[in-house]
Image (cartoon, rainbow, N blue to C red):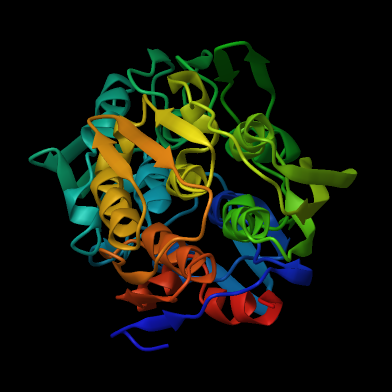
Length: 432
């Protein structure tokens, strides 16, 4: 694969067994919470990618030693809850949106001035959504016209708040909860309009922090210290999703994915696929460092259209482009609404997804907050997909390629390194 392009040939099916990299969201959080833990934290199954390695580099810039203990194993030598040092220059988060939104919550409890910046894509991301609640908590935060670079000036303590999220966002929720660990007194509460991924809450609980959860609400009390010790990171559901979708669409498939995280705040894709008539089995369910894990078996299926409602969107926001692809093969018209957040991802993911799928023979109408897809139960024609600087669009183009008649050329496919560096190799390994 080169930066210029990646050629994906048609396949008859996906067969065999596959393991996917460690969960990116949990890998970020394990390193960040490890950095402020008391003592070393062993992170096994770390999902190494450009994004997560940016998090490793960020905590190292803050004075934390991170030891490479194996191919996918790190030891984060925690500096304690308030033990991070202000670096001499800006912290570059690269393309890591999770990092630039969660780290300010931790920096709120340190002492000193910090600046966060990133690549061109990151510098277009809205940041007032975390700046505003942090200001309410007594932290001095400056954005650049509402976007990065972001500057945080902290005194080591915050005020507890009760904050209602204007938009369902696990990143904003996590930022506020992390800042709440440093409150002088009182409970920090976040109320969310819809459920969002809860990896931060699970890891905080594993680190000994009392977490109070009820429908639509989560709260933490100030912490004296964190004791995380170890984290076993499950396989990333969002990395498994392209294989699940491709195996469903291809008639010769018989695929098993081992050790995949099946946290219910992440698996909305399975809910939609069940409505569409997919044959996806989830077996050997177990808990791993507080996270639900299972093996996933996929067989081909004839699909029918199924709408995606706004309340389901936070549970599959990263997988919505793949839902649009799957809908291209379903009988009927599928409508996805309430997904306006896709407009401010690494790309305008609504526009990029519609352009990608229409360019290879799909029938996708972009809406302001989603898509309308007319399914035709046959293979896509094939052609060319522009990744638009977005790793999710690059994966979408690759899956469209194995499900096409002529194959797909994905331009800008090097962006896959953001989350899944060897995605193309693993796809080729199970393509029949």
